[in-house]
Amino acid sequence: MQICPIGLYKINNSSYLNKNKPQNKSGEFYAAKSEKQENGKYYEYLKNSILFTGKKGNKPKEYLSSKYLFISKKDSILKKGDKIRPYKEDYSREDVELIISKKTADDRTANLLTNYIMGLIDENNPDSNYIKKILELVYADKLPASVLLGLQKGLCVNENVKKDIDKLFECYRKDEDVQEAFVPTFKTKDEANLSLSIGDVCQIEGEDRISIKKNENEIEKLFISKKTYLELFPPVERFLYTQSKQQDCYFISVFDSIYSNPSSRYKILSLFNERKNGKVDATFGGYKRTGSNVTNKDFSRYVLKDLSKTLNATRRVHSGYMSYTMEGLRALEVLNAEETRKNAESKINKKYHLYKRLLAQNDDKTIIHSDFEYSRDELQDFVNLYESSKTLRNIISTEDMNIPVFDVDYGSVLYGLKQLDENDSPKTDPKWERYILERYKKYLERTGKKTVPFKEVIPIETYQDIFQWEINKNSPSPYTYGGNSFSVFGVFKLPSMLLPLNDSETTEKLLSMQDIQKRVVLTCSTPYESKNNKNIRPFHSYSLIPKDENGKRTFIVKNPINTLQEIELTKEELKECFNVVEIGLIEPLSFYLP
Image 1: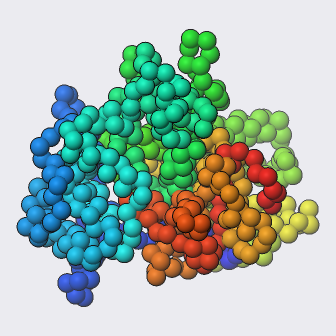
Image 2: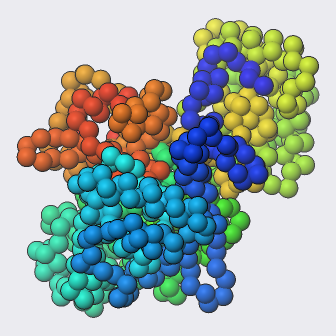
């Protein structure tokens, strides 16, 4: 049931409905009118069908598993092997078929991927050579085969991925140590400072943890060992993310912008701490040294204990919940979900105890609290709902959802009440919608205000009914499903602000600012219309990386659905494709932003 004609119902036109998800519960894709259309649907279905699995016992831990692809083993990327052919440049169809056939579970998938990849190689784009190298890494079990599902025609390969691939192939060509190439060892911090670029990590002799070059003059010690760093952020994959079914593009875009920016990368790496027993924890806010001990900076933050155990447990229970590549990102996705869920449940608990107190203190039929008149029946019904539930998964706090809080006006309230009166067979118990609307009606009449924000603690079915948005009560957290990047910068301790992409003086200052990457990280959000000619999807969040070359400023945007490839836009094209920029401040700006 949709209760309001304006305000609340706007969410029905957004990406939160996730209309592109396969709707056929039998696991088969829809039939198409032509073979080309069918292959296109099948390819999209493949990309949405990769599932996580955990391995028990002493078997090698694997990244992913699906009925379509065989996936590379996690630790193999750092091992030398004669499968890698660093001098191979010409790829015939037979070469591609050989690689794909070893990585797929059925002939149809193998044939489809072979045709698709041959098309990318044959179109003679400047990055064809890197696509061949990716094939070689997949063939040698040094990249997960799921990478092959993210390639798109006409897009450039991620510049950071290119640099890592070149460095990796150079190691294989010269038979050098991969770990030393990506985490070099130095005798002193001064020596490291002279050799490293900002954002690079290293090992200082005699220290048990790695360090990072934080800025031009500072080498900062982190809280994890070289081995753990390479497991969390392996070469190539540290810049390769593929969004899962969790619909957290807003979170991944912020992560990518922070990690891709050398000047802010330390903010990601400092969130992980390796204990003396080898177990690794993660917390937003990061860690600090207090004497000889390592403690988290913000004790109000939730700490995700023992990543390996926690992530494997999540994989077994909730398939498709985390991103399909790097373990470091997956850890923070789970941390974000757990923290937001716990914060929301804390508010739900407080609401329950507040309602019990109000019921005990008042015998009236209506109880006024914080400008609102609650009916005694509503408070009692909520108390009964809370007490009858073994968990809080059937109650939701809309204030904690990563979505805009919509304002409801008087006309919407009246329309909603009319709908309730006329609807003979509502999907859910209509009493909760009626409670809300009648309370809002009295509030607006009493105060004379034009609108009231929709902030409720209600049954999850009521939320689904109002917003026509399906949420699985058994998922780890509905609070991370859909949202905006603006709300995420805070968890990485970056002050944030929102800037419309218009022709204002402030916008021009930001987009033209010198040393921009030393001062801010950026994401951008799309408006309602699609920009197919630029491969830009509507209702979506992208990471935004300023690029300066030959005195010209352009912008790199990356889609969290797969960051292997990127799109380069001019300032004018950026304004055409996106309507807003979310800003995270690494350091204060020298000019005012509204």
